[in-house]
Image (cartoon, rainbow, N blue to C red; front, side, top):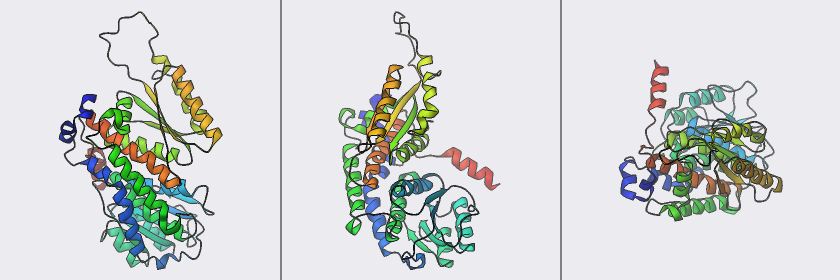
Length: 375
């Protein structure tokens, strides 16, 4: 199975919609959306007046954009960033708040209902999604602002196009810093371009971090723990991307919380309790064992306590014979560090699906669920 990772023609065979190419556009997405938000009319958002809270409403790959803003703003913004996934809006949200409705297609039912409710309550309203969509038309008809984005193959492949408008609006409101002329975003685009080059399909596994990670995770149930400022969001992204791109489940958690509950699973049937300690048994005809694989997504270079937790996590897992993979963030700003993690993760999840002979693009269960609900 894993031999396919170093066979570009074999990878292409199972990727007819070219998900790998869509992932490679991440840097271009940052630049394209930065231009779009700069060109947009944001006057209705009254960004010279600080909102009481920012509420990002979105589902699936679009909703993750709110988690990204929340992680970047967590230790910087004087007002809270709340991510709402569902219909309508919580009762506490009102005219003092800024609602950011994010839907890549602009047709997501839950997000549209939240945007309608935001307008009814007199909230400042920003829409992000496809131009001329129902979300675009609603925002404009209700004196809101709208930033059109260029959709890639799927919402999950359009993350950076969706994230940038949220970051820029938050920066214009004085809630986060992106540096002079939004320099942090250009550095993020450069980082994503570099990852696209390093992780490209014709680059072999031993020098391709995404292919190496895919090979390590194959045949396991990944338990993904994120540490530091942006590591937990990257861990969430990894679990979502494994499900959609590789069609595989995963468990994700954030440190230190995961130490207080999920760590006990390391002694369960898929952890050390499932290991066979008979050193003298002939294993030639045994199937490959299936069990937990701990993946640490680290953003803790400047946090000694978080770093200690990551090292302890790896030690405890390895002491039980559980394999461990570690990816660490690089870069200066929070958004660039997040990109350094998500960029590799996105590629790795696509490669894992392709190595298994799975087309990463189709989402048949989601389409079927939507059809059943529409009936």
